[in-house]
Length: 497
Ligand SMILES: *Cc1c(COP(=O)(O)O)cnc(C)c1O
Image (cartoon, rainbow, N blue to C red; front, side, top):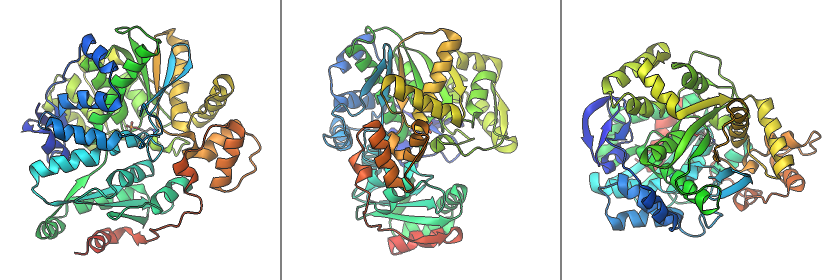
């Protein structure tokens, strides 16, 4: 299997190269040149395996330059017993007849990013051994919350890597901040930036592209890499859980093997739902992919009209991990559905960079419509859905998953489509305790984060994840705050160069 760039078809590299490079120098994203297929017999066979076995079966179709032994080490390292709070790793919770929630937040940081960021360090170190010859990898992350913690947890104490996470000093939730500044591990570092998320992100980008810093790194046998969701190494592990969820839908009797399902995904950067699209193209019987957005509904408009237009108001919502106006991974879908047309993709993306918008042609739009449905909801509807599902189904949704549940509800009402459905659940509700509590309780007594957690527990009786409860009273390790102009110096100090 080879990988090419969405903006230059002449690129031809291995998966190890795609994973170590992260992004193509032409600005495009790496994609496999074809999508491997699974037959129903394959799915039946995969159904008989545990999550580690399933992951291996899927990953080996894409990472053909990894040996059996290397792959085995990666999946076992990432998903071994005890790392996730379910022995199924990504279990289905049956919400009602025909509708199941896929719990993707059973990992160490309680958000779905763990599904990929637990395995990325393994994939990256194996890839680096093949392509970089003993250089030490320095991972830089700018985060608005969930990615930073999941990356820290994934890379902690991984040989030959150092990780440094920058977060906006006033831009993350109290729980997210505590999760990061108490991080354990000998190769980790966290630094707050006086500025917002964009400042942190721009700072990281300018370090990546600074020639002088690159020279200094070379002298010290170091190389940068990225852990954000444009890296193929983050996308490919996400395909696994859609295949796995289909198998489990059949095993639990919600469908017969071969019957179609719908999949609903709360979407931000379009990574998670793109993985579901890959699963569908591989041969998993999926009917519709339903893309759910919050008030930042740029994707809803695109999937309904064919015009992507980021020139609009930006909203800070109760589902902050979906507050995004440029969904990077959409580029991969545009490339695939345009018939692997690098020129067309480049033109659209150029237009997006220059004017903030582009309109796809009719042929491409028709193909998008075949697979995708879309909808959005606002904060009030999000809260109402948390309350409704809690009262009717006795199940507590986080704010992001609630967006998906609300959009799904509207879709069923307008389409009458009763195809059995999987709703991707992307975070544990206790990660957003204040919002979730306010959805189900009118008179909140608590004032600080941990009393909210306790009050939410009293009310819902849903177990509090140990990783979050255990943060109470834990001593912060990383209290540094830097000016955004000094980020490079923070990197040098951490590395002692
Ligand atoms: C990152 C994130 C999302 C969005 O996922 P994308 O792959 O960016 O579409 C949704 N929910 C939560 C909780 C997240 O952390």
